[in-house]
Image (cartoon, rainbow, N blue to C red):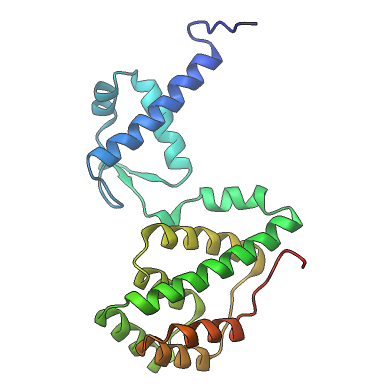
Length: 215
């Protein structure tokens, strides 16, 4: 059986809509736009993409709904920071209903955190260690701040983004993680020495691995 897509049909409209979203993403990439930058106007996007302004408008509405962009009245449309994306909460609402999914999330997040700590131990720079030491000494460190530091010091963009998503998912079902001050103090000492073995062992001691698969 062959499918024939009629002009103006829902199937064709969906295809144009998806293609428009992808082309807008490509424009963001090609123009080197990052969080805080302004998108081209609706008219300019329509001309560059050679599609109707209604298609551009719908695509932008979808991106705004997901929190990927924001419209400022009288100013234009701007790209938002990945940490504020509402699709994280939306996806979590559906994906994390399954018990196994929740268990796998905890295990995956724990493994990502361990990897980020190991990489941070190898790759931290003087400014990174100075920031960590200051906050540990002032007793202002907490779990979220610590791993924001660790993922940044790991110097791996993708791992940092993955951790943010997993952390947001986890926060919706497990609440806030709390670790004692002594953990951060001992971690600071081990990280300063770039002692990866000690860093890994301390992580396993203070944060027991939540294995989701039975042996």
